[in-house]
Each structure stands twice: as structure tokens, then as C-alpha cells.
Length: 162
Image 1: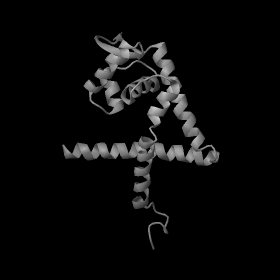
Image 2 (image 1 turned 90 degrees about the horizontal axis):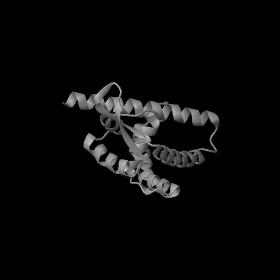
Image 3 (image 1 turned 120 degrees about the vertical axis):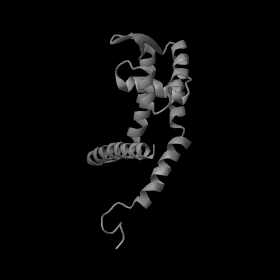
Image 4 (image 1 turned 135 degrees about the horizontal axis):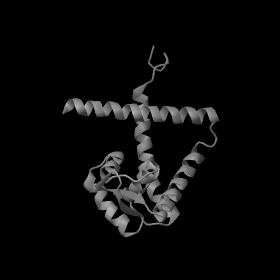
């Protein structure tokens, strides 16, 4: 009896599909297409900074942005300079620590992040439009659980290795 026949997850069949999903997202240039659609020339890291701030719903320190993006702080700082120059983000004093600075979206930055997010969400929604409500809910719940659990597990593996 194979893993497939007894109801267990066949991870050897899942891995190629995960790799294909990554390739589809990169090859389709989803981020680049969405930027073209909204008509604002931004590179992918700049968009990620804007989306990180948008989804946080509050100003964040540079280190928190970097943590949420899973990159090094200097990487974020480099992009923040350009976004600030373009008037899409601004820095403000942290009310809890006057030595620290917070980064927040400007109204224009928030509007651009919203348009980008709306475009991508529309495309994702169109991809599952023919799915039942139950299938969409199950997919969302299980994908979230999988990503969270895999991230936590790989963090544990990294922690044990150091």
C-alpha cells in the first residue's frame, strides 16, 4: 500500500508542485506585472517595503520592517532612502523612544500599496473564482498553516545548527 492509497500526504508529490508554484510566481513576473498595471515604476524590494508597512497597519522601525521581510536592515534602509525621496514613506520620532525613528506610509505611498495589493488580490481571486466557498476557505486555512509551520520548523532547524 502506498502513502497515496492510505490517505497520508505524499510529500514527494507535493514538493514538485511547490517548486512549480515558485517558478510560476517568478516566471509570470507577478510583482512586475502589478507594478506595470498601476503605472508606478518600483522595484520588487520597494514594493515589499510598502506592502510590509501597509499590512502592519502602523509605523514600524527599520529593524521590524527587515524582520518582517526576512532581510538584513541595511537592505531595507537602502530602499527606504529612495521611497522617502519619492514621498512614499516618511520617518517620524518613536513616541516610546525619542532616539528611535519609525517609518510610515505617506498618503501617496498608502494609495500605491493599496492599488498594488488590489491588483494582485484580483488576479489571485480570479484564479480560484470557480472554486467552491468551502475549497477557498480550506485552501486559505491550510496554506496559512503550512507556511507558518514550515517557517517555524526551519527556524528551529537554524537555531539548532548555530
